[in-house]
Amino acid sequence: MADRVDFYFRQRVTEAELDLAFALLEKADRDLAADLNIYGIVSGAVPAPHSPVPDLTVDLTAPARAYDNLGQRMFFGTGQTVDCAVDLVGIPTDVATVGNERWLGIFLRFKRLLSDPRTDGNSQQVFFRRDESFELVVRQAPEGAIGVAPKAALQADELLLCDVRRRPGQTQILVADLDTSRRQAFIFAQGSSVSVVTGLGASSPRSRLRCRPRSTRWTRSCATTSPRRHAGTPRRPSTTLRTASSAPPMCRRPSTRSSTTSRPAPWARPVPPASASTRRPVLRTRWPLAP
Image (cartoon, rainbow, N blue to C red; front, side, top):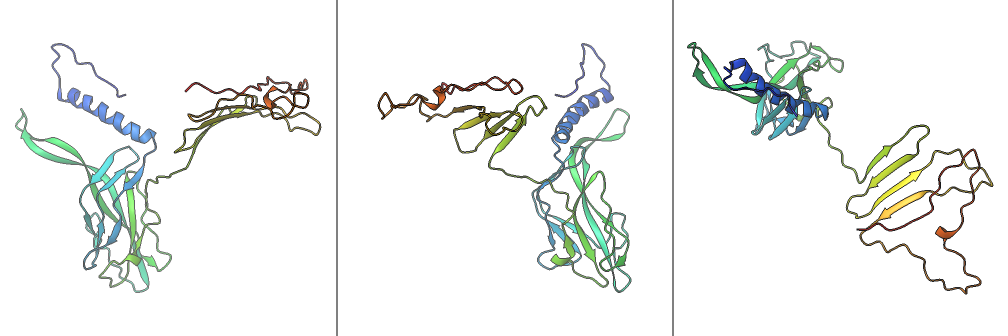
């Protein structure tokens, strides 16, 4: 939840107070993304040489979504073209010395898009709309020998999309000139199961809960952290709880042997007592749960 302000009856609200109410809501939204560690390029913004004829620009695919380290969301719904002939301050990125190369960095950063101009009570022009937007920035590193030239430094409030290599007399940026090894992307991982381990204290048992997708069975098993069982020491039982919609009731199966040779079911056998040093509560009962 967000921090709140309580406007009261007959309050003369100032511009700063109104702005504060919206700023608190915006901060809560960004804190949620930052707390979940959502940082990087979620999708889109994949670099490619300009189409149909390559030149000194780079095309970025759309739609693109990204979050910076402050939880600020950046989005663009149409493809973007980045000019790599100059950097963000207009300095050319050409390589002057033969045998050298220069690396450029294409960065994405958050920006406000101002629109809907209006005139306030002081006859000053203000922008009523301040929408979330983005900005593409080209930064160049110093020129260096081929293979040892440095790359542009990463920025705290920007996301690196790719590195671009410039060569002497270059007129086209090709696929071989694009490097995405340092791309700051948010990675999604898929797994076939989820495991949660709790109670890892030295004196507490470990409890593990496993959930298998596309199955109606949940299994909870508990294992103790007792010392290693030596030869001759009876095995201590574990507690197992299973439930499934199609699981049959746990009952004694009919014996096919005579009454004189029949043996009790495994869950009805007496449990030998544990030693005094390793004595723990033992539960040897299994039962079905109600659906």
